[in-house]
Image 1 (spheres, rainbow, N blue to C red):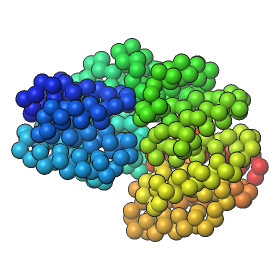
Image 2 (cartoon, one colour):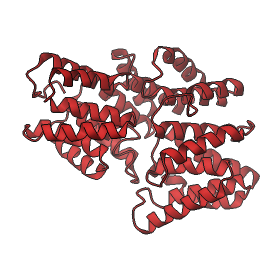
Image 3 (cartoon, one colour):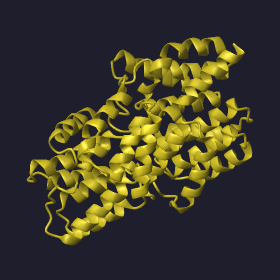
Image 4 (spheres, one colour):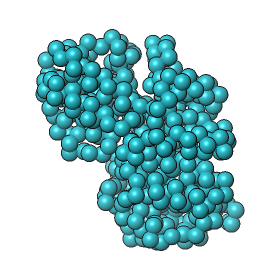
Length: 401
């Protein structure tokens, strides 16, 4: 954003805003406080209000985010169009206007490719492309990032997100080079550490990945946006390396709802995913822990709306044997599908039903439900590492079928 003019006469407000942007783009703790300090220095600074709204939204502080968004839009009315778009794109994502936000972002980036607060909502597996439900969305994001790459040089935010798009499309070594360059420039970026973990994961480097994260995480505050999810990566590698006790300890301290902090989408998906994979790995099912995850999912996602959350809520209902909840969810998903409102399509109810069948040991039916969608499960959102639970479930069902 170095070339973006900022409509504030306050140097202090500008500096606090740029600090907030840096913290936000690196998933470092405290961006909302930096934006609030910018607002304190200049209450009329629209971009600072928009930055605060984005930071609060990512932390799932939705009512506060919407209030900040209303203020930002009001203050942005008379701004130049470039600044106005830097306000509007993040606000549309908060308000549920994802399709409009993405359209505006693409148009804006053609003219201003270096505006990070417009690009950032498009990036990652939870972004406007990642949660679009579209087939080929991983390649779509990579093409966007590679199209913009000549404008970004060695910027660590961009290199990190470019590396993520590359590793998610199987280009591991190119991703490795880019994430190493990014981490050289900003070693405390949580997004950087996260993407480096994915490179290790996709390369099958379990010991190296675990060692890296165990060294990196202690200096990252627990209120950081990615603390829960990075803890999930650690627990997963401990599980895969056979240290089940350590894996469960890491899970309980850093991932499980109530013991960790993270956006609800992370807390639910990481908890359900770890526990499901732990059972497939032979660990004893803990009914109390599973019930807490199920209750958390119901509280934070009471209705079907986001495919990635729906799939993991279905895992929890299946694992706890809550057939009525699973059946109600399936009916809602099918109604949404019939109404054309299920962005990810029929894979979502198919997976939800398959998880229930798997728990009931109807392995043949689980296999029959999963197999037709195996090549397109990117549509539910999330990373390849997260979606591997689908492949593991199918393999486990085939093994006993």
